[in-house]
Length: 221
Image 1 (cartoon, one colour):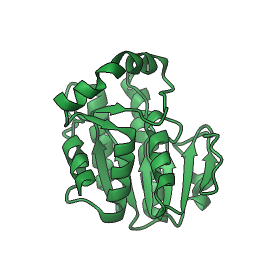
Image 2 (cartoon, one colour):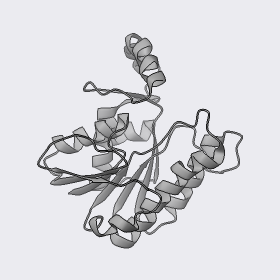
Image 3 (cartoon, one colour):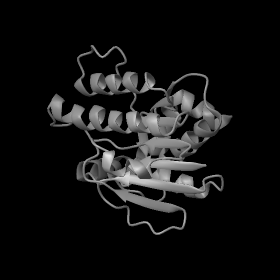
Image 4 (cartoon, helix red, strand yellow):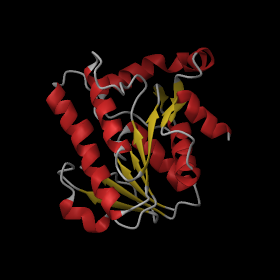
């Protein structure tokens, strides 16, 4: 399997990349992002591209892939809706539209979030924008799946690039075993999400939108 990975330098993207490299069925991972990952591995190639809203300059390198794992995203904290939508909706749709044309039948898995508003009419700005993004991806000629994890536990020494998130995780770390037991349908690790994405890319799933309980069902299967 040949995989495109957007957002490989983020917390979740790093975890997904590690799971791809642990899976012998993945022969190649090509990362796409605005910064390099600094990972040196024979099965990893990197595309560094400044404008992820326009992929025309690199589209010649985006063909012949079986799956795309789209983990790129930003926090909505302190952002205006137009700026948040430019990254969350604009960048994601630019990738989805290009890949639908270049890789017909590709599996496209988008990391969304628990609480996403599929009606696009709710009060929460980030949830509306995520919902609009999901709906637009599902309308493309791709085998598209939306992953909606809740709290994500970083594994394998992975740390968020955002300082406030690093502080948050450091404070919460001792409580994670309790949270996992108390809220099994809200907590997933970077390993679990990466493994589930690979499983869905290989075998599909019965519905296009996967909440945490669905992701756990994929792992059990």
